[in-house]
Length: 159
Image 1 (cartoon, one colour):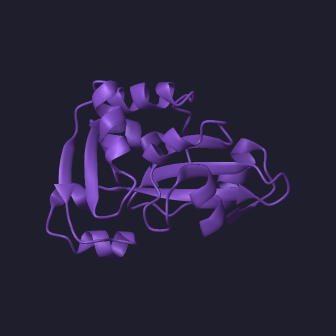
Image 2 (tube, one colour; image 1 turned 180 degrees about the horizontal axis):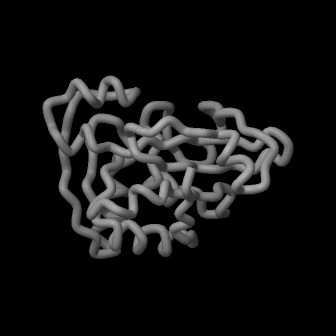
C-alpha cells in the first residue's frame, strides 16, 4: 500500500485520507460514521465470458450495475466476476480491496477501465488505496492524471 502513496506523491496528486475498519461491501461502508466513506465508489473486476478480456468498472456506490447493458456497450456477450487469483495476478489486490488505483500494477494493460459518467459530476472520487481499511478522496482531474500515468483514458460510460 505504501507504493500507492509514493506514486501519488510522485505524480503530485493530493488526497484526503479516511481510515476506517475493513469494509468488504457497500452495506458495510454505509455503517461507518464518515460521510466521505459513504460516498465511496463501487468497483467491479470483470472477465468477459467469450473473449476473456478483463474489465474494471467503477460506478457510484448507490447504483446497481447493469452488466448486460455494460456488455452491450463494450461489445461483449456477458461477464463473470474475475476470481481472487486473477485479481492478485493482475492488480496485486485481494477481494474487498478492488480499486482503480490497483491499475498501477497492470503494466501490460490487460484490464480495460471504465468509469460511470455520473461520477464525473462529482468534484472527487472516493476509492480505496488498494486496501479496504482506508478511503482516499482524489479530485477527478487528479484521478485523470493517475489514469494517464497507467496508460489509460478515463472512458466514461452511461449505464
